[in-house]
Image 1 (cartoon, helix red, strand yellow):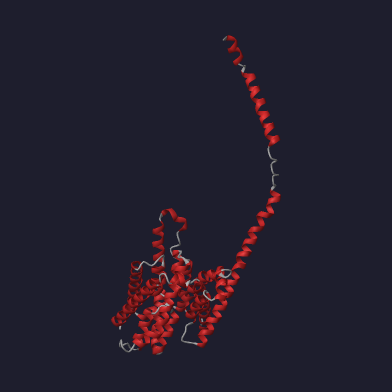
Image 2: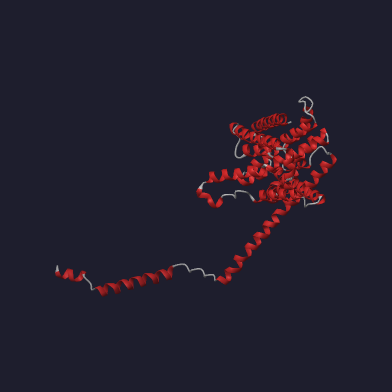
Length: 389
């Protein structure tokens, strides 16, 4: 037993030396039989390949928007031509219809959904914001005060009843996404421009925006033909009819086209009341931003939208600038033309996002919401006009 114990115990130094020889042998064997390691690339070799793609991506991104922007420019020219040939058709309405047509024509469908998509999306968002900013030059605070506080309160009640009533009804009908809120904003404020502003702060899906714009544009276009037929049966004089149109029709161009049928007095009253509704875009958007902030919670502080979006600030600045009286009539006319072109390009881009097969899945519910909301705003505006005149 003693001899066996002597053979099993080894000195500590000898054990360490044996382990070292074994590890060295295993390392040598592994190096001899393993695959050769790939050469290490130096920073000087890798540096050009890192720098070049960033420049290339920026150039490609800018170039990818050109087909869509060019198509939007063609759409604006076509909408302007339609308006010149048929003055009763507003340019902005024609732009939406042409955009929808382009999205479904066999020759253009592939371009609209493919190479032109980035530029059309840019037009529908960025150009819409610029158009909203310039829209502020159409409104002066002195004009609003000239209407009287009773009219201001009436318009506020009409806007509130239309917005909350439409949202409530849209939820009951089961419309998806942001469609109830967007339709309510378009009906209660100023059509497609208000939809663009609201969708920006809510981060709405492009399909919801396009569907809402199509519905509001369709109903506003129908108002041009329907409301003048109701003036006599409802017993409205020219001034009352103008206020009713201004409080109940969506887009500024549609208001002008509808009210001008009753003469200059009706047209002047309609534009003033309508622009008062436009002024309410800023507080409505600010209130929606607060709602979005609360919904996101404290975990998304960095992603919260600003309380007053930059384009809304620009809109208010333009209102203040118009109020000063510093701008000449020529400048205001030029700004109005630029604003119409920007909005036409934006609406053409949004029209190109409309997909009729998808729209048919909620078509009946969307149409029901549009019709009911139209009745709500027309009825509320009519009651308000009678109460304030």
